Image (cartoon, one colour):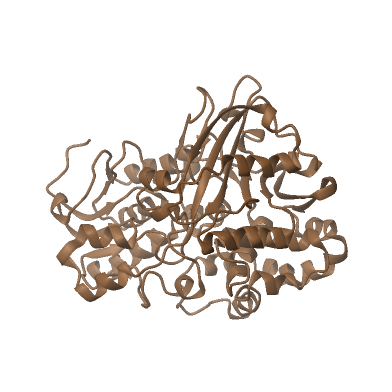
Length: 479
């Protein structure tokens, strides 16, 4: 741990992408910044390790980064100088169906539409106007939700599509491939697909594929975190790893403190520094279901029946829209799905630096009730085997993490919730509490910058950026 000065302009607690994003933004403004991280390396849920066999690199939590490639903050930083390289799989996504078929999301909107056959025109009607708005629309979607839209027509069109349920939105399509593609992308919301707003994440991720792709970081997601940390240090910032903050008294003096933690953790650390009423509101912040995560070491590629799945960085395994919808309802009933919807990433097919000796890695998870300790390994592998016969024979080693273990790994993942809080309409628009400046607490020194603030989950750093801008304005008088 580096020697700490007695005071700083700003301190950031937590070194996930949002914490590092906040620290970089503050350092760019000329402030003296300290980042305190409890673990021995930076990254939060954006870390990599050799979790199965020596020489095989696995992403522990986050793996594929459409919002990272889209992030206005990351795009503005020279992260490539610090070792970040985005790798784009041949196909962003494939969704296998029975009979060796697959719905395919390609970088090209036109190619994707043509592949959906009878739904070609419906797909174009949904996505083409949004794609025409370009990156500025993604910038707007990663901006404060209550701000004045600078693309009002595009945002209105997005709202008409996205604020519906995925079930309702799926009626746009006649064929199962298009419906299944929507179901898998909407399931990233971790909401029942019948809930209003569940289409929003699906539309955003689909649009991102056409505008920026679904890339991965060469060498592992840790490279993104390390690049952010290196850039911060190049600006004069200080990072203290192995430094757990349990109370405000653990911190040196500073004008402001930004917390890349959950609302519940903020209340615990801040104690009496926050009004009781505000603390009670933070305690009522709702978290969604958890996940069960598996990393596999394989002796070769997954033997998918559908050829397109062999060329995709991400594979959504769950079958039809109705099958995915049933699997995604189960965690909200406190149940585990017998046939879970499984989100898989095949990073090593496109990044040879992660593997050696002809071996491959596979990354995957499914949604489970909050805090679940049920072992989902056999159910997940049965789903993969369903569309890739012979998959189990290729397994050399595996690592599993249930929801309780994920929270132990990163205390921000309350009950295994990887999105920073339930993504229902209310919490999409007002997280952690309704406020024009949701990152600011009633205490002018304390700010929240985690994914429990807008714009929410995803590896984009924008929660940290917006929190830092709020602190610069309120505490330092900077616009």
